[in-house]
Image (cartoon, rainbow, N blue to C red):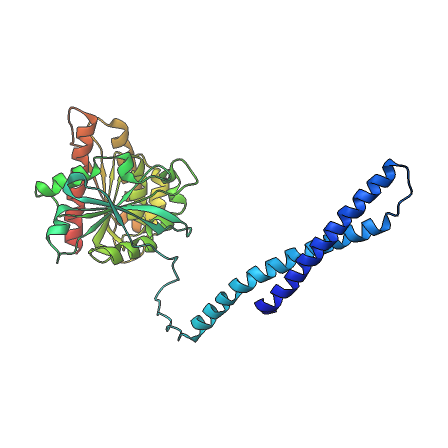
Length: 355
């Protein structure tokens, strides 16, 4: 019913309700007075008037809601008509499966190691948004025409990015560039998945989910001047808890990552050998396993993984594995800085040869 025709019944219901309520109160007073003097009084008029007042109140409430909604309900219908009248956009051709929407807006949150650190959100393999941090080297702003290789930096702690675990990682990469040992990289640090306290310990169960991160590559490629994803332009790095993730990604998809560097890690050698055995044909994994000279457990784990890959099946036996065991310094943080520098140099050399 149109709004003007609803107002009149509302006013009538208000008036009738007011009259019936007043009449019921009068009858109630008369009834109380009669009971005081022990006189007989008829209760039926009181009940009729009270019931009528309640009914009018219900009508007033219903009509008030109807009037309020009538003013608002017209607008969505009109909006729907306008939307329907617009011509539909032609569907975009897709070479692969449909991806969850990706957010390509990144905000500046800091300027470590002379570069810029930005943060945004990108859909994860499960479709839920996750934090992704991107470090841009100093040259990114000074050379507006250049496109940069990418290093994906894996974290070893659930719901954290690797730079939160290893705050000086950008210093190590920047120092390698300043010393002329590496070209500038764009470093991408996605948030590690949840579900377990140490995601990299379980990565061998589903290495493709980690390596074939198409949503991440799409978002980074759209937002930044990077080289196309592939063995000539993208590498992967993991430090300490994230080392096993980096090794798994590099072994599983050498067609996507030209090289992988794992620093101070501990590895499930048998599982990673199985991952390397199922790598795509036509590409060879390149892997650096680096540990400090006095890290006996780390070097033992690296050598065990190297042997497992060389003795493995399929593409695992063809993987190029190098071990770095020469870094030594007076403090653990200094050793880690130098190990990151070695990893950056290895990635730069390997991607240059591949590209």
